[in-house]
Image 1 (cartoon, helix red, strand yellow):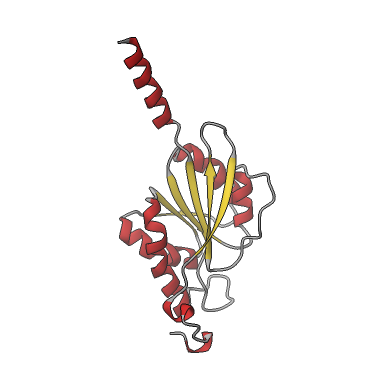
Image 2: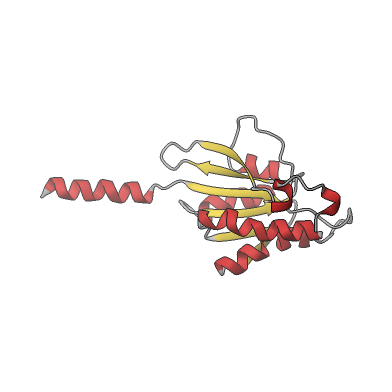
Amino acid sequence: MFHRLLLAWMLCLGLAAQDAVIVFLRHAEKASRRTNAELSASGKQRALRLVEELSPFQPVALYASNLRRTQQTLEPLSRQLHLPLQIYERGQEWALGRSLLARHPGQTVVVCGHSDTLMDLVKALGLTTPFPEISGFDRFWMLRHHATSGTVTLEEHRQRPAPSEAKGTPAAVRP
């Protein structure tokens, strides 16, 4: 009987100590260089394709900065998963990073930000090793906070290309 209780207790501890995963990405392509520019047509298409890419991770929360293009990037995923967008103030990535692990222990969340602010988020989440510059619209990163060791790892993932990109269609004729 004692062995069964011990085994059950150990299984409960294992379930309670799940890794937190923060999937983060830069907003999709924007229509102009204006501060609060919206997504371009290709950016809207990329946002739609992200649904297929990110849904399998089963995020429990979606965070976007207060600029419209980050919200537009996650809106299709928000609709698909029936999750509201949680808006954070651009420039507050340190505060967001420090709060994510406390708000979502052992869960997966998605954060959409900007090429010049996502590095702060990654650092706030505890990654101390060098990592590539956060740029490009065609990728996303998975930061894993390992619950048992407290270590943090980062993986880069490339988004699957659009059908026109896969066939080598020149960018000028893309819809």
